[in-house]
Length: 194
Image (cartoon, rainbow, N blue to C red; front, side, top):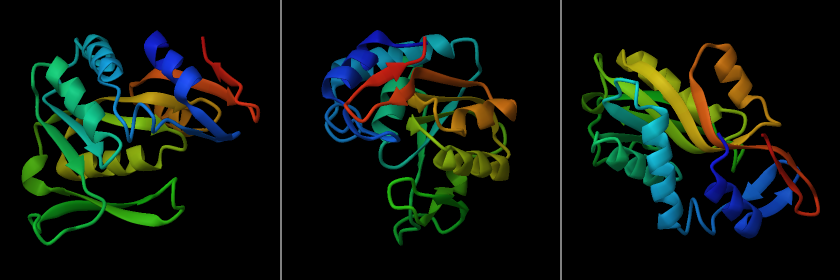
């Protein structure tokens, strides 16, 4: 799709750490640029207007703000987020899976309370960045366990040079990214698809 405002923020505020990593914490997943988030929410509502979505599912913490803004633009539908640990103040009956954290390289448990997601739910999965797809695959597992239908998967930024997006599409999922980075150069060179 290539959301221009998002690409502009990536060019001006994104920090290329290496040829696989870009830091977007100045506007997307630490400090939140509300003008950008609202533009993204409008774009997601338009992209998925023809789908009978009744819940948005994401993973803490980077996807929560994105999911909330998208939900507001999609008529205020509920947002469910997977927690990375099973806390004592959460319903003990949960759907659970393990996912490999791209930031730590360790396996992490993610959980969703059974009362938050179930059969009959038609879900849009949202996350901030799609690289190898580990977090999204964990959310897919939870949807399958819950009997929920996945209507679509979307992210703010897809790393087109990693296999996550292609793998999900090959498996038949409707994956839509607001922008796709084709290449990260050592000198801060960022190439977008399209």
